[in-house]
Amino acid sequence: MPSPATPATPTTPTTPTTPTTPTTPTTVSGLLRSIAAVGRDRVRGGFSRPVFSSAEMDLRSWFVEQAEERGLEVVTDSNGIIWAWWDTASGVRQDAVVTGSHLDSVPGGGEYDGPLGVASALVAVDILRARGTSLERPLAIAVFPEEEGSRFGIACLGSRLLTGAIDADSARRLTDADGTTYADAAASQGQDPGLIGVDARTLAQLGVFVELHVEQGRGLIDLDQPVAIGSSILGHGRWKLSVGGQGNHAGTTLMTDRRDPVVAAAKMIVSIREIARTHPGARATVGRLQPVPGGTNVIASRVDLWIDVRHPDDAVTAAVVEAIRARTEVQAAEEGCTALLTLESLSPTVHFDVGLGGRLQELIPAAPLLHTGAGHDSGILSTHIPTAMLFVRNPTGISHSPEEFVEDDDAEAGAVALADSLAGLLS
Ligand code: HGY
Ligand code: MN
Ligand code: MN
View (cartoon, helix red, strand yellow):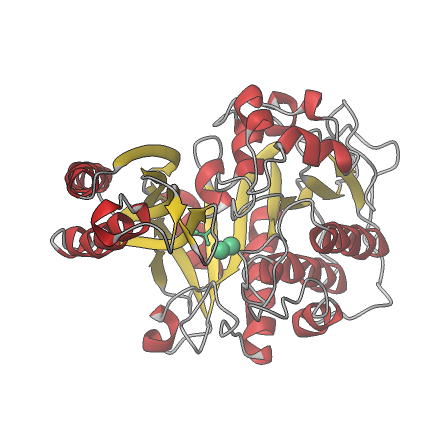
């Protein structure tokens, strides 16, 4: 269990850290196999590792052990972000080259979304040490909590707290499906929710962030390459749609006497797809739907559903959402129901830093540029420091599913590309 967050953010160590040889796997696939039993979801398949769950906490402990085995100095900051430092001889922590990713997952997620970037960062440290790399600036591996927003609804919550993209009070009040607040969940795992919030001191230590991630599409399959450099992240947002009706008995209520929100929601879901289809390049998804109270012999009183909308042009995303709002209000009225659409989380389209991306193209020239439709902490951090991403080929092209996959050789190629990138940035 990592040490509970301390009020102070990472400080300059007394003795600069120099990596040591770990006794455990020093391959990406070996590291991933060592955690393959953690958070397996027997019902959904794949992995369910929500933030502050025992599975996610076990992975955090695993990372701390792996980092400490490598002689890195590990600090968990007040937002629950874990930082593993390889310091320069001076020990001064500024202008750091940061890599890493996240360990939490979507429900029934794949093995690689998040952990691939964390394991590759650990192996990249092994490679740099084996090469005798000397650091002109410090290196840190970061593990950001609640990247998926699967428990508390806000994507990249950890990096949003760090950068102030979400205020501390709003974050503390967030609740999960059981009504547990973020504050209570954090406190139950030894983190003081009173200390969360924008962390200027940690931000001041950061220079650039390079995140390695499994590709969550088919780009590298078609390009026939193991690794790509990220060019942009599709803008994306999440909205909650609450459809209100009249709860009642399934047997005693005539069909003519119903105001059934599930029926209204069914029409709305089909319309949401139609609206997305009429905006070229738009994507709209309803992957989560919750009838209340949810009984087999009960007409629901309410249905909550969540809509994920994405488009390269943020104005089009907004237009899609407004069209959905208008259409669902009409459909609710037709069924004698109500509809309330509220924004939960919004991330504008991100274009990665051109200078940093260009430097990576010099360092790993075989890697093509590739945009992604998936959000990442590197997108949130890009408002504060230059960020970049490396994507590793996923031969299924499927993600947020147990079918997500990376060949062992490609995983190792990703770690070498990351090490080559970091080496160029550290010198
Ligand atoms: O939802 C996303 O785009 C990312 O996988 N968190
Ligand atoms: Mn991810
Ligand atoms: Mn994901």
